[in-house]
Length: 413
Ligand SMILES: Cc1cc2nc3c(=O)[nH]c(=O)nc-3n(C[C@H](O)[C@H](O)[C@H](O)COP(=O)(O)OP(=O)(O)OC[C@H]3O[C@@H](n4cnc5c(N)ncnc54)[C@H](O)[C@@H]3O)c2cc1C
Image (cartoon, rainbow, N blue to C red; front, side, top):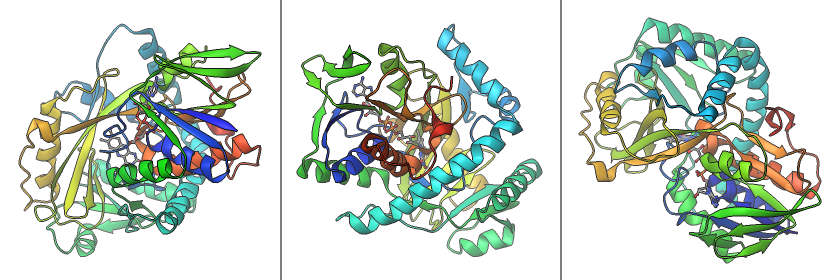
């Protein structure tokens, strides 16, 4: 079959890989130059530990507190937008224990599938992308965060995911090359990390050499539909016929879906990252600095620092105040590491595709017989991409899916 993918971020690229392996003709259409999107500059964490969706108890109160600080890691730009109001209402409705209890097993199954696939990809792809299984440290300085993380660790262990609550001394033993000043931490030994730009920069040419056609710099603007099927995908320059269409347009997917009359609530969650030398912060295990929501990931000779979630629309503008807050957080946890403020031209920004309930959209919709959605992975798109690609290929092949996709139904709102 000829399958057209709208969007070539990590989700589209993973999907192209598994579709190609199933023998399909694959075309990836992307409005960008495919050099620097959200799938390139992220923190590179592969996180089976993240089984609690963003919409969870406590998030609303914490979010409101953060809203009033100009350098906080979270911000919603108040604006009169019906989409934002609907999204906010759904977020509020899902921020409860019942939703977490329902969502966690589904996220766990998807995450573990994805991690196993990354492990296989590291062996089968003929290029290295820094895939390393060294776990993840959730580090905290306050009693409040300690209590929350201990609860999260209990929840993870009850679901069969290993989580170890560590004292400050035990954290220091795990990171012998850098002084750590924390109250304690939770260690998830099952997590992994990789270098996302290395993966993207090599996977795209690898697929192109094997027959995947990439059309970059052309936005999909419209579709032609006949008898419940999408027959044509239209860019400003051409019309491409399709047997199957995959919508993997990241944060823009809500707008693209609207052109097909499909409602998938989505907001862009902007985040920033920048690199610093590994010698300035010689960590060996990725970490999340909880009070500041900063991600720290060793990537070869460098360390990537990332953070911030700004719900400010489809806008990539960089707010240096929040970037400086990322740099300022580092010595609070690693007192000997002084990170210079990065020059603005070295700061990267990306838009996470965020559904209000924290679960991705994966699967077919009622409306079209030949459309599969693969989007909305929010803070876990890199982590969950191989599983999503595999599931989409199984759906298109008419096979049983490796894990149930009902919880991710695009028709759920
Ligand atoms: C600071 C930061 C840190 C992060 N850290 C992590 C992490 O450690 N682990 C993790 O798992 N995730 C992380 N994420 C999230 C992760 O980066 C995203 O979830 C993921 O990149 C989304 O991938 P995607 O393929 O869905 O979207 P994208 O990478 O955004 O790709 C979508 C593509 O669709 C294209 N497109 C849009 N509209 C159209 C159209 N109309 N026609 C054609 N093309 C179109 C775009 O040009 C784009 O290339 C992080 C994100 C940020 C911002």
